[in-house]
Image (tube, rainbow, N blue to C red; front, side, top):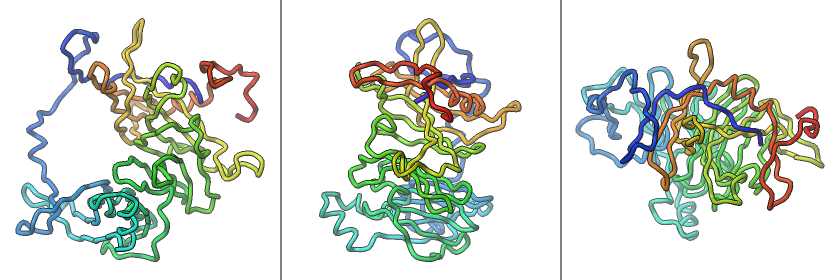
Length: 364
């Protein structure tokens, strides 16, 4: 694990305080009243105004040019942004993808209730001119391909294991890069085995080490993006470096090399050899930093003032002073952090300490 990645700057600080615990921050450069949001068209799962409103349970949205694809419970919608009428958006195509009776029966036998034993679409990606879609499928995840224009099925479904979560409440990320699918999710019914996984391309399938809390400890995946020769994963997790004190949730960025071929039969076979992670530092500077430890969302990579940056939305934990912040991270600085010093724990009882440079193997 590498050391902390510092933020470039704060853009916005939104605090709900009963006292003056935080230093004064400059106000926003501009703002939009919440009433303005209500003027935008809404999507109610209807093809026309006379149709009945649907319970959607929207899980993911993909925009391709001027078309929105919406993944919900049991349904995939196509919405044309140029054909909006008044205060509501109507779908032009709808594809229903329900779990079969046997998958639902097995799901119920495992103790899940009826509302959980449905097919919640959790992965929705553009690939080779079509759509790659994965759903929870009553806790037996599946993936399949669809055409973009008619939402017709292309080919046979494949297993969604390590590509899609079992439980619709679990966060996941997915993207295609260099012809391979990179995912961050869990691989099992009990959501114990968290994984960053590569599959479907010409490169060998690789995953993170199984059941090793130094790689992951209860991660909540937020986003993933391609930058240069690497894939970056943004998430939050329980911090192993603070386990001797209490359960502390922190935000992280991890990366893997797109061209990683995995280890040998003796070391890291079929596993990442380039996996590294660092802590994301979103805090108020001063003699004693005040940290916003929980990452909730990120932007895509934005080119700003000649630099590639991402914006992250952070908050304090529920048992802390309530507050939230937006921090900006320079991708070049993040990449530089992964060339920095490592930390290690020499025994289960010891604290984490920096690793001397001479003790770091070459190549890293």
